[in-house]
Amino acid sequence: MASRSAFSSHVVRPIAEVHRWPTRTATWALVVGCCLGNAAAFGQWGGYGYNRGGYASTAQQAAAYGYSAMMRAQGQENLMNSQAAKNWEEVKTMEMQNRLRWTETYFEMRKVNKEARAAEAGPRVTQDQAIRMAQASLPPRLGSTELDPVTGHIEYPIILTQDIYDEYRKRLDTLFAHRAAAGGSIQYNDLKEIETTVSNFIDTLKQHVREYAGGDYGRARTFLESLAREAKMPAG
Image (cartoon, rainbow, N blue to C red):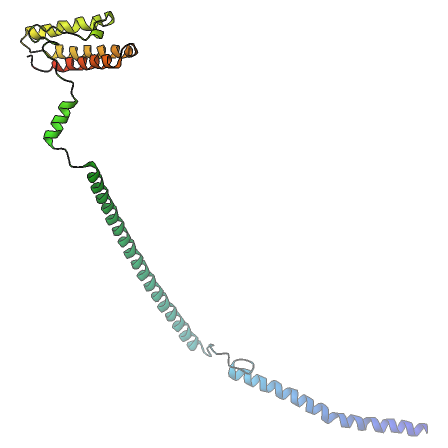
């Protein structure tokens, strides 16, 4: 029995091995065929069974592709530069138009403002009116009872006869007496001295303004201003 078992094992195992060989052979053949097919497809289409495209197969074709790409890039650059230049021109044109509108608006506003102010101010003053207005603003001339054209005697308002004004009165009396003696003419130095004396007289009067009634102070102030004006006028 032992010998039969050994014989069976030696006979059955080779038979099993014989049955496995066809299966292994078919499997390897299938793997090799797939690999060869994939390799052929890769070599033909540039990838694993699909066309990737855009790749040159020769150096000359690669150079042609590169030159074509460069020309396309240059054309795109020219187009973009042209568009940028066009946009810049449009911006400058709009800027100039805005400046023109601003200038026109500015001068139009000035014109309207000038016309409005002229309308509010009324008609312009004529030369004759201006002369009359200037004369009206001057102190009135003194009468002969206030300033004697023959002797040069000055009749001061009552408040100007106070002792605090003696210095100014004496100097003015002397200057106007010289003027009368000269027939109403006066030297430049005497004129400037009269103006200075009257100015100092008024300054001192201002210091005592609270001591006088409003009307008295006003008449005294006007009298002194008229006296300074008379020095510039012909006597008589």
